Amino acid sequence: MSDLTLNGIPVVDTFAEAFDVAGTAIIVTNDTAKWAMIAATTMTGFATSVIGCGAEAGIDAELSPEETPDGRPGVRILLFGFEPNGLKDQLIKRVGQCILTCPGTACYAGVDGPTKIKLGGAIRYFGDGFAVAKRLPDASGKARRYWRIPVMDGEFLCEDSVRAVDGAVGGGNLLFLGRTHAETLKVAEIAVEAAKAVPGAILPFPGGIVRSGSKVGGRTKGMMASTNDAYCPTLKGRAGSALPAECGVVLEIVIDALTSQGVSDSMRAGLHAATEIGGKHGLIAVTAGNYGGNLGRHHYHLRDLIGPHDATKEG
Amino acid sequence: MSTLTLRAAPPERLDFLAINPLALSGLSQSEAERLEVGSSRTGVRLGDCFAVSLDRSSTLTIDGGHERLDRVGASLSEGTIRVVGDVGQRLGAGMAGGSLTVIGNAGPYAASGASGGTITIEGDAGDYAGGAVYGAKAGLDGATLIIRGSAGAHLGDRMRRGTIVAGRAGAFAGSRMIAGTLAALAVGDHPGLGMRRGTLVLGSHGRMAATFVETGTHDLVFLRLLATALRRVSTEHADLLGKPLRRYSGDLATIAKGEIWVAA
Image 1 (cartoon, rainbow over the protein chains, first blue to last red):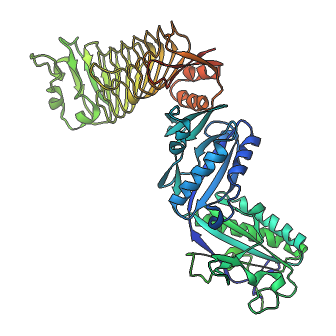
Image 2 (image 1 turned 120 degrees about the vertical axis):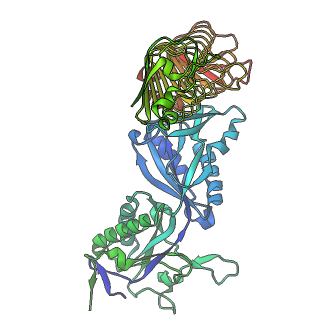
Image 3 (image 1 turned 90 degrees about the horizontal axis):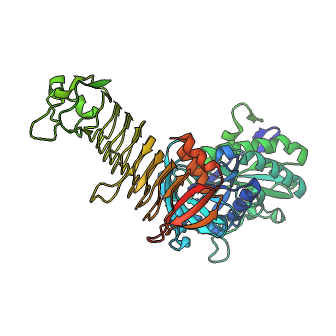
């Protein structure tokens, strides 16, 4: 299957194919970390795939009061879309429905970038003319503009605009080929923990893991994507199957990040973490998903992620 | 550091609009001494009243002020002016950037129309500090005005944006305010009269106008951000926000988007 190994686990000499996307980050705060997380979890729900959900979103980090603009506990959320206008639409909808509505929550820009997305300046219309803007310097002296929208628990405070970054990448991935569902899930969980620890990277699928990897198109007319039959264990033995006989389950992690380096670092962390414990959990091999290299301009070769000191060649 | 040292009390009001570090950096000493600064037909020149010492730096010290020095630092866009002594009216009027400090008192209309930079008055300020001159659309317009001592009446009249902090202020602080932030440890009667938007934070106040309505006490996130912003210029004023506060909304005679926060 492969001439590469890492920690004794075969690594297929292939690459993950990823795409340029529009990405932004926001910080939500609340009086307690619990309620900041409730707001963030709600906003990042139904945001696994940009194709079906309009956006891919996830929680990048929990922030201490010292790390937030208002000195309260917070959460940094990353949101990705196909392009800035789609991202703006999703951002306003999700902040409007999930952050504005959540008791005690405030919302701030979480990243600097070249593209301005009006956020508080759009949501302020909910204030029905009673909202007021305020421009104040932050702790570093940079002037920031906020909207204060009257709501039933006081005010919803939201920064006037946030920024979309250049260079965000979506679709970094790793596929773990295992023997049993429970053991492969364990491997994937450990990979997720390592991959999401990289700042500026999120894994948007449930628990960071996707079981329904897809290919472009399908046999049914009009399908944009359909099941990745080459990696379905029940389709082993057919022409086109990529799975060895002993493989009983395949789980994938998908990574979006504000930078290409973030995707690379996150994949590397996930790959190393998975292979470190893979031997104990029946991990057969690690591979990655791509579309032949013609759709996405970012290619993350697993050979490069193994690293020069860990790579071994077998005869 | 360039220095202008006052030699004698000015014989008339002097206009310092053209006296700033940037303007002086391109002049020789003799050219600077010939700059007309008088306000009458007698043609008073800078060298008539001041000993001039230039080094083309971005800092200018006026050593020895006088209440007849008008428009000191007016339209300043960069650099630093430091005045040891008093100044007249319209200190820093229309200033766009830089730093202006007066170790003394200032006359009326200090910082009127100033859109950027920081103006610090270590002593007292006259009426309409940060206020609009007659006919002007706005008073302070984005700059930061710090008055360590007392301000006169109508502090921040028609101010549009920016921040004013003052020790004490007279009546009608924040009158006709368009927007911005004004914090004072104590003010006289009728704060915020006619204000449209904006925020007043007051340690104490005189009579409140009948067109303000109390909305109660509120623990708003905004107050945390405001405290952070105020702490950059005055810890004492930022600490006003650390205590329980009552909020008044008004002026109901206008669009009533303004607010006055006072100690509960």
